Length: 530
Image 1 (cartoon, rainbow, N blue to C red):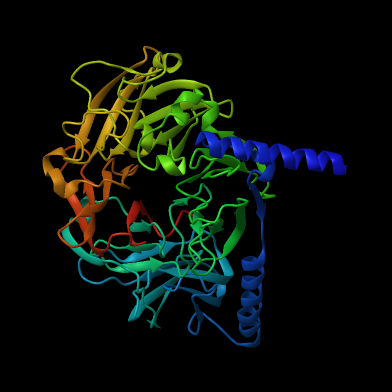
Image 2: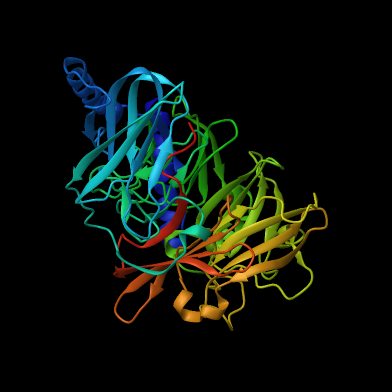
């Protein structure tokens, strides 16, 4: 055993000497282990103790519809929420409404089930305000009771941006709040008038989305360390359902979960991370078992590309080994594939999952290895503006009743990295919709917005493009727009048929290197169907 240990150490030293004398980067995984994932329960246990306290208080009291018990921020995670607990004399269904200020819709929700004991989430309170909340109880005979209570909230979000509404037409907008997802600070949601109506008290960044069960999936940092090494599944009250930790040995930087996390059809989670067993970053994903928190798949994008692509990469952050910079993943249920976005390759790839075989590549057709060139989509119709340093590709619902085509919406930052049109690089950013014929291997552009706005809509880094399913509108986020002495983000919602701006929000006061850089925005209702 001692001989073997000595041999391994000696071999490692030899490799290090070779690396230094030849000025090459050598990956030597004997000294490093791949990432691991696991479930943790400390937050869940803390919240269980909080629950016990207010449940005991409820049991000791006499709370009725006319005298409800109101617990503000019941789980210590969502300061603009409350929980109303009470009993009705007859089985009743409950409607709760938080009154909004002029120009914004009231936030209201009706629970479909009839019961006598009620725990009613109250969502959408204004910070540092006296909120008017109306609770309605309707019994099975249709008799209605109504109670209005006041909830005085004294909380405020210090990290929020300076917000300016440029346009707001609530009747034409997708329902819900606009959730602002930053790189580091607390995520928050604003209404049609730009007023904050929800935020998390925990810092985190990047991953932030709604799961099929209505819960939130989001990245989290412990305290103020900004490592972003936790995934939390919570409801909108902030109650933690699952807590996962990503362990990356020998990785001291922040953003362990660096860009994205999605839910797979098998209920597991797919997360973009670093495995740190080599000299490259942001090119690895892990599939996490939803129940156990354990890693069931590790997927390395270097297995998809010939070695020459990552070994000879000469673009931004080459010294950090950031040759691909995966900033998004999207699951394609129709073909059991995933879309992956590589900013530093200015490319979106469709890959079978979990085998990682290439279906097609959406990118400018220059500087590809011969072995990959046949997978690059061929343009048809008008000249194609290929993506450059793009973000957030998503597959749209069927747009043309053609089973051979697939529409992809993304945010084209329009920065030529290793390929693209240098003559217009960095002149503008845009949301763009491509139509891909997977049978023929072709691509065309069917929609775009942003070019006419020029530099005022340009974001060199970050950005988002979302199709809004209820209205068909599109929500675009230019998250890091340079001004004279600072930066801002611009969020625009466009009507489905006319591209008329129905909502535009400016987020100002972002400084260079600021954790408040707007990575993405999402339009979501506070309440989900129940």
